[in-house]
Image (cartoon, rainbow, N blue to C red; front, side, top):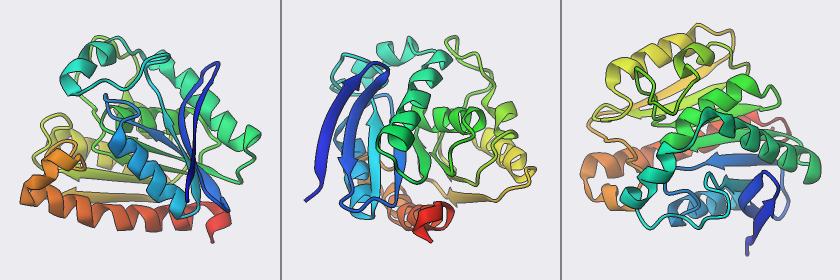
Length: 233
């Protein structure tokens, strides 16, 4: 039985799924619907695999929005200064919980933040970005260039993309992959034909291409974490 904990301590806010015998930690940066059931399920799966996982709440003091429509006004108010609270969550996992290694895993909005955080926080052992919401040009509330900063990520990166993604357009994904491939550390990428943005969402998995992408993408990501996290070897 996985023990979960809601936490709200200063800039550290979200929900933690504690592994029984943790061999590392994963900070989950969610979609715009924040600490919702799908993100909690990913945290549970990670905890069952031995990784204590924290789902970061991007909207402090607020419950998860009911749906993407309700979430959009809140997401539009987020700035890239939110990286400070994500860094505080990494500190909580690494220092307070004393986990031997920490990775970041982001989805959609959180996928872009995963790229930014991995470039800025050198403590991370691995970065996983599911369909990161990287737009060119930036949205009005965004100040950091994710494509440029991707070149500065010092840890291995695993990025997942669907060719029908209407947010991370395919040419932008190819640019991101080129930037990541130019580093001196490993890059792994998955390309899923005809899968759309956020294809891991349960409601979108009714479409065959999305369901196949969801089923195929998760096992390689877990293998990636097992190799990259030092105590998992």
